[in-house]
Length: 220
Image 1 (tube, rainbow, N blue to C red):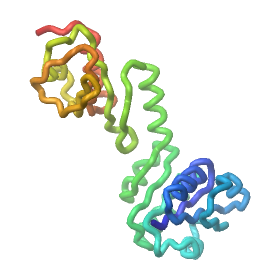
Image 2: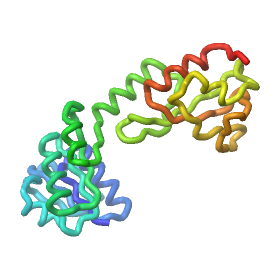
Image 3: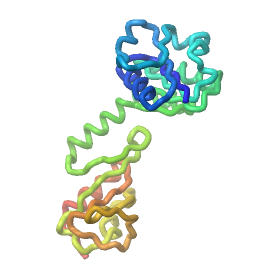
Image 4: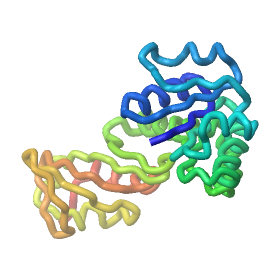
């Protein structure tokens, strides 16, 4: 596939290398030639010095034949304009935008762009680790609005069901249960055993009632 990466900072350089290693054709655009020094020595994609805002630069980067574009500069405004141009002018099918300022996310969402907000996601992950290190997040969707958590069933929940466990956590949904190394799709009537690993999908706020419930002795 053909990809254009606008911005060769740390994220852009790492992304470009990962795409290249996966066998894709990659063109990296940055206004500073020195920025390309961040690229891995084994990178064999194209580099193009120029302003990502300029349609002529994007055309030289091959945007007309691009399968996707990532706008990952350190400017939210620049990323938004480049991504909007890629979508509306050149009809690039996949456009992803890096976002720093959470207050500007709504603007990007209005454009219908896919957003990766390292600030929002990072802050949420740090909060999770600080407030409850026992629960383990194994998958994050979007910018962390919905996540899948891994929970180890404590001994005092032995013999009770998944329905009873989740009864007071309406925003938590069972995804999988692993017992003795074997995973299955859990039914509400499945009885829990100590050491079971239960994966549940939830919002960060929605997980709090389940965490509290796990810490209390179950009542049949």
